[in-house]
Amino acid sequence: MIRSMRHSAAFLGLFLLQALVGCGGGGSSTATVTTTPPPNGQPPAGWPTVLVVAPGTGPALYAASDDGAPPFGYLTEGVRVRIDGAPVNGRVPVTVGGQLVVHGWVPLTRLQAYVTQRGRIEGTPAYLGINDPVGLISRSADGSFRVEIRPRLGRGGPNDALGPFVGSVPADWLADHPAGEGDTGLTPGEYRRLPAGTEVPVYDRPNGTVIARLPALDPPITVVVIRARDGWNGVRVGVGPFLVGFIQGELETSSADQLGERPEPPATAVGEGEIPERIAVEEGALFRVTPGTRIRFYGEEVARLRGRGWAREMSRQGDDVDIYVAVDDGVAVRGIVGNAALERVPAGE
Picture 1 (cartoon, rainbow, N blue to C red):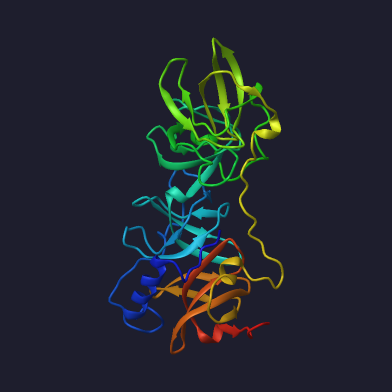
Picture 2 (picture 1 turned 90 degrees about the horizontal axis):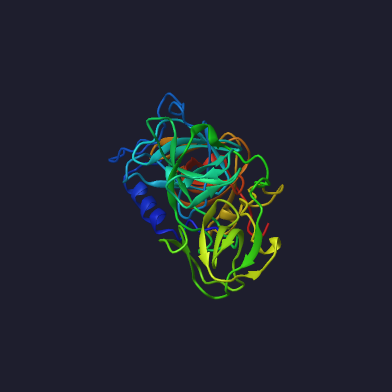
């Protein structure tokens, strides 16, 4: 679901502030916000050069690394970003490429990588298959990465992910894109259906400790039983990443098509002449934006259009226009442009 910029409280207060401190074109500012990434433009040693935007809500692009830095843009799950420097205060400087080039800071929690190997992650009940996503937390002294793993049930919605579980993976396991749709080399087993509408505890071993609770769903969850003995089922749960553990009791027979579907990032391309969804759902005068236009935020350039954009006018002061702009459904930002860069789209056209 695309959230309206005009109805976001964070942005509403932010742009009242930007107008007050004169951060548009030539006004003097009483606030200083660093909006450009470090000058080296390179990821830290051992880090991936490119990461991918993870699922999430709310703004993802910020003007700086500090907690008080204002947000100015949204990113869609699956968008690739170039890492321009080391994490600072849990945020990393990035460049978003494409027809709207953007520089900003993104919380590390909103980024992920894909793994190229399969295996049980020590210290967690999680199992990673090839092409499964993991969230990056930090790089360890031995070169490995601490990661967040969220097993997915393949149902969609707020109850789809379990965890997160925190573990470590080698750096050479990480890639910036999946090499296919999933892992076809997983250990086979028997498909079994959990009781409908009943929360089911998962144990680390028979008669052991509960490591997770599977939500009560109807239709019920189907799991893969790898081994069964004395009323206990060793199971693999989800569509990747996976939860592995033991479930007690007899389970009904099911089938592979009941496992659920691996979530896929939404498409971000728009057709010729189509308005990006984030712009379409907004109110305000509609404009086309000239290619080459540079967008300023708190007096600093944060974005540049390579292609022709769509924008909604939020406010204006003299020749400076506060707009919400996008070229496609991948990224949308808010900032100041000169009026000459805008071409009004007549109402109803």
